[in-house]
Structures are given as structure tokens and as C-alpha cells.
Amino acid sequence: MSGTETISNDIVHVIGFKAVGVSGWRLEDLTINTVAATGQTVSGNGKSNYGVFVSGGSANWVVNRCIISSGTATNGSSGSNGTAGGNGGAGTTGGTGGCASGGDTGGAGGTGGTVGIAGTGPQATERLAEMVAMVGKEVMIIVELEMDLEDLMDQMVVEQVVAQEELLAAAAVQVAVGQMARQELMAQ
Image (cartoon, rainbow, N blue to C red; front, side, top):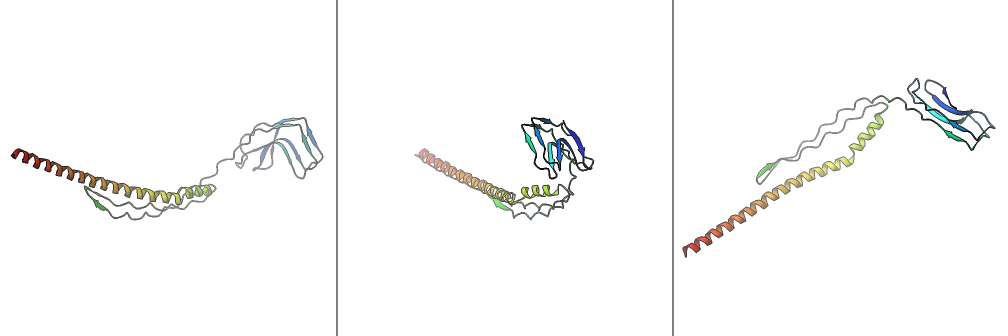
């Protein structure tokens, strides 16, 4: 058994059994099932679903050995989007470029601009919380680590170039020594 009750344009629900301001009653050995609610209220709210609804000062009541199963309620309509956020701030100036053996490398780029200010509206608070989580201190740490990683990679490239040049120089010395030893042998 179930029925739909409309309280106002904002409140509608499906109810299997209702007791408001009624005292001294008993439900025993019953099965109460309600159907699923459908649609939304006139104002766009979802509809509730109650197997047993007791309120309004009801007292001295008993529900004993009953099986109560309520159908599903419905979702309300989606809230409107918040207003657009403000523009972000300007990024900082990039670092000075430098030179390395075997090629030029540029300086580190500037950091990104600041995040715009969140808009207003029903969803703005949630969106603002998401934005704060996305651009919190952790992101700044990641940016710093990426910049440190780029500097480290530039340094490794320079060190590899220097190491290759040292190997080439050592090989050239060995070749020269070998040629001199060959010429001495041939001269004998």
C-alpha cells in the first residue's frame, strides 16, 4: 500500500503508513511496500519515499514483526551554474638564459599566473573548494620540483657533453701517442 502526498510546491512524498500527532497505536505482522517516486515537485525538488512516517508528537506506538520496504526517491533538478570566475594574474618573468658547452640552453620559464576568483551561485562553493584543492601548496611544490628537475637535466646534459669531450681528447692523445710510436718503429 502506498500513496503520494503533496504538502506544497516544494514538498511531495510517497508514504506507505503515516501517523502525525496520533498516539497509542500498533503495527504488527504487516508487510508495507511503497512504489518508487517519480518526477520532481513543481519547484524542481526531488520527491521523498517513506515506508512508515511518524511525526508531530506521536507517542506510545509499536511496530512489531513488520516487513517495510520503501521504493526509491527522486533527485531534484540540477542547480544553476555559478557565474564565471575572474581572470588569473600575470605570470612571472622567466629566468636568464645561460651557455653550455656544445650548445646554448635557455633559462627556466616563468611560473603561471594566479588562479581567477570563483564565481557565485549554488555550485560556486563546491567549485571553489575544487579549485583550492587543485592549486594548493601541493601544486606549487610540484612546479618547484619540475623546475629543479629541468635544471638538473640541463646540468646532466652539460656534464655529458664535457665527459664526451674529455673522452675524445683522451682518445686523440692515445691516437697521437700510437702514431708517434709507429713512426719510431718504422724509423728503426
